[in-house]
Length: 221
Image (cartoon, rainbow, N blue to C red; front, side):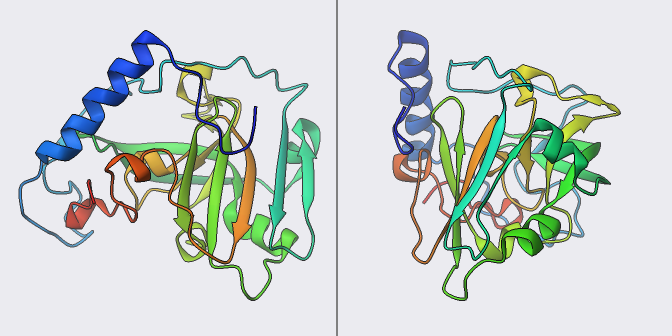
């Protein structure tokens, strides 16, 4: 599958995509409010205790024994980690909330994985690198500013609440960027590409906001 190719069409996925694009056109869930992150629950969100499963209708089969993560583009030291190499990196435990653009938030998620700052120290982004695109095993892509990825609460997580992340939630490895709506936290990540110019990706070219700040309701753009 080409790096920027969307998942193949299917009835379930096409219906889901059309529904989400309609949400963007209608401005669904927008309250017109804004808040500081000190207000734990962003505007328009509701707290849930479970972890809803959301995807594009495609759940890839990713065997950790065959999994690889490539970090390339504008970096001085491109790397490809297999599963054992990934687990051999320094591990961190972080706790954070997650906020989904569909209106739910889940508090106090315990993650274990590799800190984004460690990855950045390893690959050494070039001075002109300003943006990142995450590529997933289902063909999904999403973009963030490099400065968002370089935040202290960002990691590549393999475990949640002390157990391996289940495949439906993005296991064996997914991105966690707590300060952005959760579509920016790519599931089933396989490649991290460093770029000089921004490249709006799957949802960003389908009516969703490029920045995705929950506290200013950057749901759609």
